[in-house]
Every structure is written in structure tokens, then in C-alpha cells.
Amino acid sequence: MVSVTVELRNVEDTQAALGWASGHTLAVDRPPGRAGGQGLGFNGAQLLGLAIGGCFCNDLYYIAAEMGVGLRKIAISVRVELESDLSFTKAAMMTVSCETLDGSDPQPVIDEAKARCMVSNSLKRGIPVSIQAAA
Image (cartoon, rainbow, N blue to C red; front, side):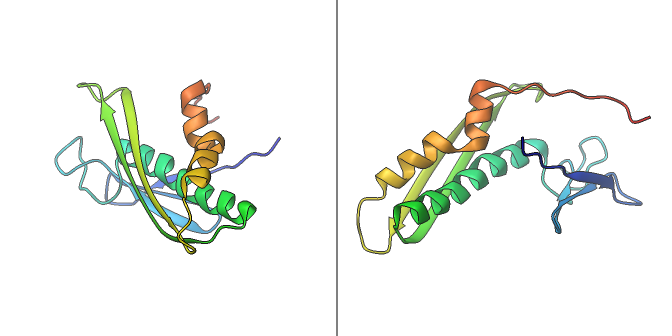
């Protein structure tokens, strides 16, 4: 089994947090005026959208490399729809535009990425999430 761990810590004198993994960092916060948020980083819905789209973007490149296809341009848009109380995501819709270097049809690359995308496949199947207080 392969595992990945990410870490988050609050940013002193704010109610935002920094998250990191493998030397990469991002800021997490709520929108200005919401529960002390200052808009210093991504909120949960934005992070979910970025996870969905970012994983798919990476998979397009993985699949294209396996198929020997060069990619020129990728554009991905992810819309995340939330319940009115913001406690649950109702749906996510991703739109993908992709061009190959040789002008061939990118659909086989997109289809294979769709079949193998870890984040979207995990969300479709549902994954258990456990939450426990640190000792």
C-alpha cells in the first residue's frame, strides 16, 4: 500500500492555515468575514475543485506519455456545487479541453484519464474518513 501524508498548521496572528507536502505549500482560509476568515487562501470547496481538476490534469500527462502522445494545451474547469449549509458537496462538474502536439484527437487520452483518475474515482466510490484528536 502507498500512502501520502499532508500537514497543516495555523498561521500565527491569523485564522488561516498553511498546508504542505513534499516541499509544496498552500494557504487555507475562509472568505473574508466568514468565521474570522481573511481570504488568505483556498476554502474547502476550492481545494476540492483543485484536487479534482489537478489530479485529472496530472493524469492527462501520465496517460499521454504512456500513449506516446504530446500535449500542447490543457484547460480544465471544475464547478463544485454545495448544499446551502455548505456541509456537503452535491456535485462536481469538470470540463476538459485538450490539444495534442500533432493535432490528433485527444479523446482517447481524456477517456483513459477519466477511467484512471484517482481523486474522481475515489469520490465516486466514497472513501472512509476518520477523525481523531491527537494525544
